[in-house]
Length: 315
Image 1 (cartoon, rainbow, N blue to C red):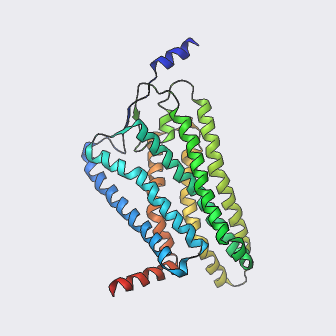
Image 2 (image 1 turned 90 degrees about the horizontal axis):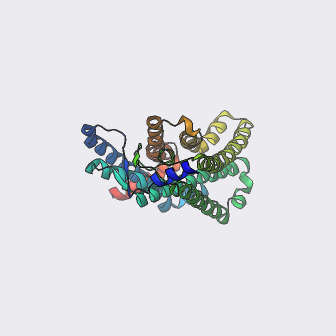
Image 3 (image 1 turned 45 degrees about the vertical axis):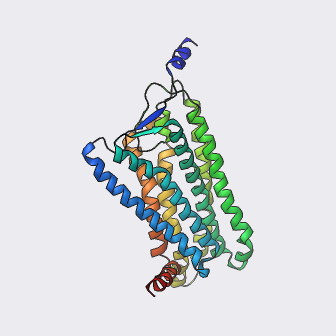
């Protein structure tokens, strides 16, 4: 009890946190600012183009492209939660973020990340129905169904993020306010908390298990059915064509869940700041920047829609 009183007396709620960022070398700040500014513009442009194409072309008004539009909009929001603050800190050199700003950044990052988990699962279900039950597709993926799946995906992220953020930011923090990361993330924040955080770590881990593994299992089940159906197709050309309709989604799922599982489903005792920063950067930047390229370069319908708009612009 006495030890607990000492810990609580030494704890404080910091007015601001300091984000160490990717590098402590001041000579690299300008170069990093330029690199991430270009990356941010590319991500915004690519994903906005996907949203524009799927809205403007009637041939893309299908459940598959409805989910893709949601995914691209989500990526725009997600990257806008992380990159602008990173750019501000790189430009000013202050590297600070307020306590409320840190809590909000954590909340929205997990809100959007959790929503993406279930959105990718919804996209997998859409591909499963299209390939395995094509005669019932219009019924099983009616507007009511895919709207329900989209709303459920966004809602799940909202509630997951609320529990994660409240569990972490109600903890007492010690004197240090230095976060060894480029954004406010739960693993480095737990390192700043006072006292025994094991219960919070277990609770955070349990919620992450639910919101990462459940969608992943649903995706896995969908692809077991898809692959089983593809193997039953006699023509090699037809098998290749059928698989190509879901290959883009499979690549995105692998990138997203691979990095997310490594970051959030490993024991806190194995936490490594440099490794986590690299994986978080991969998770934060690589996915959003590759998604438009993966879905457009591997999709004839998207490329055709782009060419239609390009011809209109030229005329």
